[in-house]
Image (tube, rainbow, N blue to C red; front, side):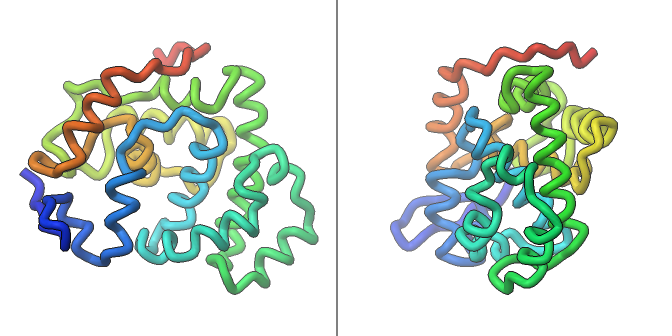
Length: 208
């Protein structure tokens, strides 16, 4: 069983929240709740890519800066970014100035556009990789899964960058494709109910 931490309000939460009180609203209101809108999904894939080798605390602190720099992660606008935009981003001290990751976001936006032509929505594609219960262990006991590995492999084949199996699994955790809140976390049961009532986006793909 994953460890828990008790917050200043007396409620038990996933242990990672103890790092900073800034994590409490993110944990309670965002992490693990199922998401089906393309903008939010694209944003989180980008931010998880930027997190590679860094802490989520660093990325969360800069999230509003990232949103401003990347047109609120409107993938159609990002796909049209030019060399001038790349230079602007590399000079933006408010974000992570990593050329490879910046180029990956722009590249991935264009790849996402092509994927949407095929599947209808980014959400339809993402949710077609939802992990099955039998491939998951106890909450927060895994850093990747067969579905995350398969999705990362498929994205790589489609030309996406900085979306390895660990990054994809972290994305799945945060976007509610699985409920990885710890047993005893005060959010876990509510997320379970929300996932049970969720109408999954219709996927136009066969992943077999």
